[in-house]
Image (tube, rainbow, N blue to C red):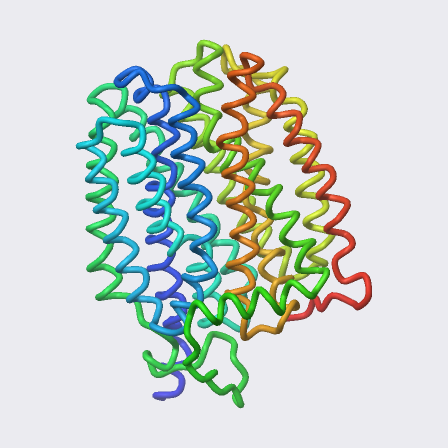
Length: 423
C-alpha cells in the first residue's frame, strides 16, 4: 500500500521545476525592463539612444558571460545559494537606479550589477535543474523552463511600460527591486538542492542510478578547463556560432529595439510593449512544443527550421510594421513568438554530446555566453545603424541574413558521427 502511494504521488522533481519556473518568470521581467526605459530616459535626461543602448548591451553581455561561471558555482556551492545571492544583487542594483543622474550610473547599475545578477540565474539555472532532477522528459522540461522567460515578458512588459508612461521610470526600478527581494525567501523555503535532498532519485531514473559526486573543483577553474576542452571540438563552435546569431536576432535586436522602432513609426509604447508581450504568449507554446519535439526528432533539423524561418521573417519585418496594428503585424508576432527561444531545447541536448552529460550545464553556459554576446552586439549595433540611417531596417536585414547562414551550419553538427537522439 505504501509503495502504491509513493508511485501515485507527484514526484518532487516537478515541484523543483515549478519553483524554477516562477523564478525565471521574475528574472525575465527584470531583464525586459530596460527595453521600456529607452524612450522615458531619453525624455527625462536627454541622454542619447546610443548611451542608453550601451548600458543595455553591457547588461546583455554580462547576462551571458556570467552564465558558465554561475553554472560552475551551482555545481560547487549549490543552486539555492547562488540564486538567492543573484536575486539580492538584482534587487540592490535596480533599486539604486532611482538615484542615478548620469549615463555611467545606468551603465554601472543596469549594465553591470543587474546584468551579473540576472546572468547568474537565467537559462543555466533551467539547464541545471533539468539535468539534475530529470532523466526522462528532460527536453520537455527545458522547453517549459525556457518558456518561463517569455511568460515573464508577457506578465511584466505591458505593466512596466504603463508604469513608465503614467507614473515615471523610477516606478519600474522600484517594482523590479521589490520582485527580486520577494523571490529570495521563496527560493530558501521551497527549492530543494537535489533529488537526494528530497529522498528520491531523479524523475525517470533507472533503478541502478547513482548520484554524481559533488564537484570539488574551483568553479572558475572548472569553467575555464571546460572551455579549453570544448574548444577542441568543432561541434562546440557550430553551437557557439548559431547561438550567437540566436541572441543577436532575439534579445539583442527585437527584445531591445522593437519598442523604440515602433515608437519611431508612431505606435504608442504601451501598444508596442503589448505586441512584444504577445510574442511571449506564443513563445510559451513554441518553446514547450520544441521541447516535446526535441525528445523525439533530430535536434539539428529542428534548429535548421527555426533559424531559416526566423531569418525570412526578419527580412519581412521592415515592410509590415509599425504605424498601425494590422493582420501582417500579428502574423509576424505569432510566428516570431513561436520561434523566439524554441532553439534552446535542441541546443541544450546537443551540448550534452560535447564532453558528456556531467558537464552539460557548463558547456551550455559558454554557448549561452555566445548568445548574449550576439545580443549585446545587436543591442548596441542596431542603435548605431539607427543613428546612421535613421531607422532600423538595415539592422533587421543583417540579422535575417545571419539567421539564414546559421541554418546551414547547424546541419553540420555531428557530421563525423551520428548525433544521439534517444533519451
